[in-house]
Length: 503
Image 1 (cartoon, one colour):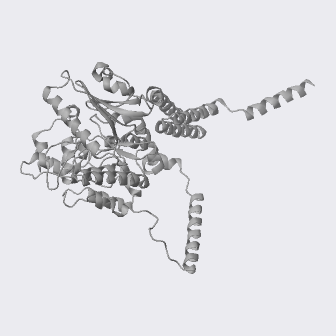
Image 2 (tube, rainbow, N blue to C red; image 1 turned 45 degrees about the horizontal axis):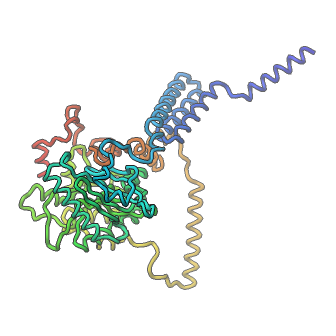
Image 3 (cartoon, rainbow, N blue to C red; image 1 turned 45 degrees about the vertical axis):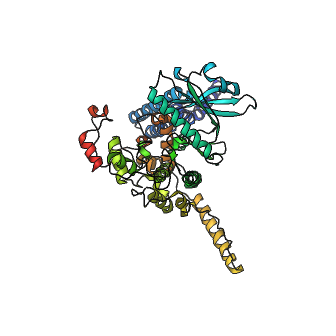
């Protein structure tokens, strides 16, 4: 009897051991679960690497290579810890933070300095900042509608008398132009404006989706369909400005806002001015990466005739390139070399994102980024480019019954082939992922998206870095990597570099 009971106990214990996971197996499963959790938390790139290392560790353990398994497991744990540390330090705070931090420079004006504004509007949280201004959300006291107010301090404490007068004159010019172009669906609407001895207030429509720059940072790169819609709206706004003899001179994604319906509104007319037919400008203004070659040549050559409205179309070409590729066409760590690239029109469609882009959009970019302004497309001509033609034709097809039958047959065959190609798609193997992950478009988008999510603050406007810095894995062209002594003084321009720009 005792022998039978002992046999039953042995049998039960053996059965439980066979069906219960071993501690080592639980270790590898735990690593996989932690890696998947880090991916869900937002650290997708590090989480994917940790998951790959965990799978590698488990395979090496099954093959009997315990030391290699421990090595790969340690690497997986290290990536998991880094991903959770980044999530706690960066992603978690930003996921719940809806407004910008308020500093001493963001203090609201007192009632006496802005009595007229306070009587009509109630200012709220800070939603943006400029070089000399702060943008706040505000509520109309009578109706409860929300708007955005741009507050500029014009006091002798911060600006000299000449600068004060220059800021006031520029703001008045901007206000006059905004009132002149009011009503266009793709240009920001000026609601109210107030001016006191210390502050100036400009009240605009509230664009809840923020800047196109931030949207692009979130998406990394846009599809041709989405880019077509944005660029058509932008070119319509530019065409309207040029028809009214107005040149913007500061077109860039930071100055393009998005409303609730993802429609764009052109903003920031601080550099805009009236330009009569045949008149030329010589003032150097704008953002370096979006400056047209004639603006740079004009600033370096006193005999240059000047520039006109064509500079806005060059900026449109740069924006179009940036939306599709995720990085601008002209960039270098040394700004002086970047300016030389602009003056010579040196850009290439060699990034992986251009492999799937149509020749039509590349042709439009090349026609907008013409160094000679006389050969550059106008806004009206750009809108007539084949890139903006709708897929559905304006004229219906007149087909015979036989032709309709053939079209239907070919449509069914094409649909069947597409369905078969989806079901028989080659699976993604671990070896392909480890060999060259950046060559795979979905993985490439995942890596770029993680990079911009983690380091997007590094390339925000107003700082020295550029979006292209996150895409560059090697020094551009023949230019060598700078040494430590040169990196600290990268903004300095030597006489030899100036000669490089001047040719």
